Length: 67
Image (cartoon, rainbow, N blue to C red; front, side, top):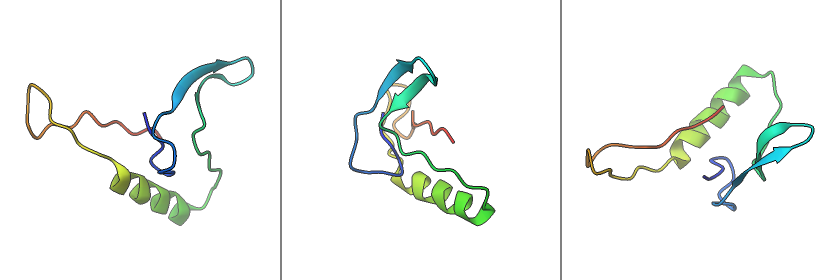
């Protein structure tokens, strides 16, 4: 798992926090209500996504993004 907005940390871990519940440790968090800023972050994240072949399909991507 990697943070698509921060290329410095490729190996993020799921952790259980007493306050937040299950969360991704070390992921960049952004708070905004600005629509244009949200779109910029989404485009930046999409550019950072990677694709890998699977046994079922050479062009398949098992990439998932969470907003």
